[in-house]
Amino acid sequence: MYSQKAFEILNSSINSAVFIDEKAKDFYTGTPIDNNIVEEVLSEGLFKTFRDNGKSLAVHKFEAMNLQNPQILDYLFKGRDLILLDWELSELGGQQYSLELLSKAVGTPNINFCCIYSSSSNFNDIPLFLDAYFSGLSENEFETIKVTYDYIEPHEIQQCWNEGINIVEFFKKNGIDALSFPIERIREKPVELILRYIYIAFVRERFIVPELPNDNYEVLNSGNNSFIINNTFVLTLKKDLNEDSDCKILLRRISDAVVENKGSFFQLLGLEMQSIFNSNERFIDETILKSSTEALFQFRNHLQDDKTFAIIIKKLLLEHATLKLRTAELELLKTDFLDFKSNELINRLPRKEDLFQLNVFYNAVSVRSLHSDDIPNLNFGDVFKGNDKDYYLCITALCDCYRPKEGNFYFAKGSEFPDLELALKLGDTAFLSFLPNGKVVLWGDKESIERQEKIRKLEGESEEDFQSRKEKEKLEFEVRAYKKFLYKPFLIRPKVYNVENNKLIDRKIKIWDITNNYRGKHELNYYDVEYITTLRSDYAQRIANHAFGHPSRVGVDFVKI
Image 1: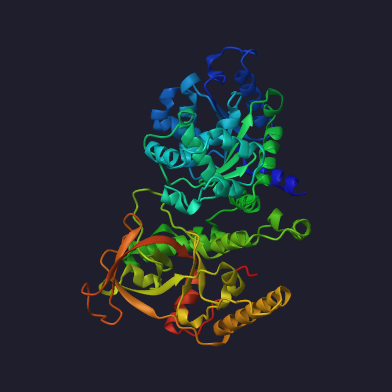
Image 2: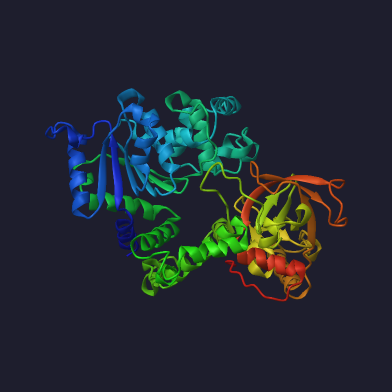
């Protein structure tokens, strides 16, 4: 049932595709199809079956000069839902060209799917090529990794993969500690990825590392020859003339791979929502069309502030879109399907890390401008991290963020909450935030939480009695922790910081603590803080209300255990 739903959503979402291959058929030459060239036959079959299924497919015969032509790149990627990309464009230099095109494709926000086609003998190495190219690691950093682990042989890593040896056990056996990995920013990556980087470092002459590595790529290897790179699903497929020339069989192969990805439900939900907007819904309706442009600009002239005017208009459009979506019937949210999926998962408990990520989705969204040269302003709900484990949440009212008094802003100050399990049990009971940097932050007085003393075995106590008492005392501690949040006044102190420049330059701002000297300026401690994320408005407003003592209640939704 899930597989069929996935195919139906994918089929309705993919309407415009492009097939890129240096051997593809150029239909405008007027020459007949050469049946001895697989790619020409594939071009014709794909073109016809896409057309017969009401979809658009452009066939492009690749040339190296295309990479330097912005208009050609716009033609290839603008408005496309699916990219079919040959792995070895232009013989020996082909893999380099394919990776450059792929990097441009995953950097295009509208592209949801990219299939790498290959009949190459090194097909099984394509995932490692992607790891190397999108790792953000330089040649020098790979050399550092190689030197650090030079006592390991590449064939030992291959043996680990081939025999299904537990990677954690492999790390222990070979003295590999992820927390002391030589490249600090990689230490929190999954151990599976760290091991692949070590292997690539040993044989990196086989792979391609960009001269100027870009570490802004978010790469998730979901297995089964599939990746998610910057929210684009990247799938590797062997060229199959019999199957891939049929549009529906091709989309079925893609949907089957999507289903295997652990985040597939959310990905498909987003695709279905996007499809609804594209095919059925409008942001502008007859209500506003009955008004006039003159009336709208009279409103703009009245406000005399284009930032405020733009925010109001975009907010109205967003609310209009929300109302439209509220009435839509999403296939994945129908009761019969939800019941089916719940029963299928009834005995599969999620990991704490998965629950954490769901809460990150609920309460935070990282703001990225659609234009790279735009520098965002400090805004309500923005979260920053200091040098230590301190965090700062902007709780200045939205209107005051655009016109701050003397550059002064209100912030709530928080600190990392180390106990993930307790955080998941407290959920919205406490003033906690789950952030995309993998941390839980507590906003407020840390003294409100009583830390549990280590429970020790008593002299003469049996192991069974000790375990029973340990579990009982642990439960009693958790009950006390709950009560402190539920019944004791919980203090969040609003603090005043002066911000010299409220532009987030390189994702950073500089703040001065003037809480106890409101009229002062730079004579007190100052901090360079880095932007982490922005809390969704309900979650930020709930914390702001409590900090300022507002009586209004704001309900938020965290998943709890």
